[in-house]
Length: 157
Image 1: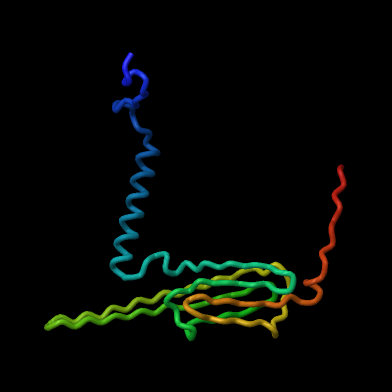
Image 2 (image 1 turned 90 degrees about the vertical axis):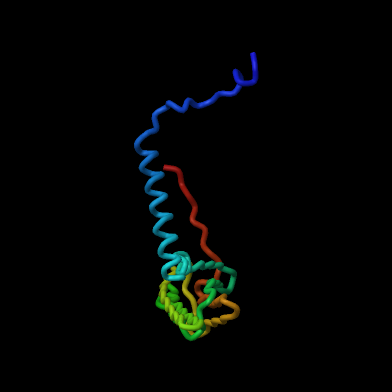
């Protein structure tokens, strides 16, 4: 008995399921279009995805948003009842001149992200700071929200 007898090999003649072939084709087409549009617009498709972290402490709700490449003047942050909305627009322009060659490219992309807040906050005492592509928002809780939580007992039926 040799090593080849101990190793199970899948036969090359095993027919593939149509679903597997179609899903592979679908994945390849998505990759092809993503590559094409990324090169064409010079903006990655994930560029407008906004990473948001929300952390609740005893006295505040802290929101951190990653916004690389976006100017502070292109951001709009608003608070409405129990939700925080962050809007922005990324503008990019490049120009290249060499001899008889002149190329100007512009790309724009906007985003909007609304986050549900875990409790009521003091709208007037909110604070936002933007540095190095990171927006940090501090929202103090209302006095009624910052108090102890009431535990609800569970009874068996």
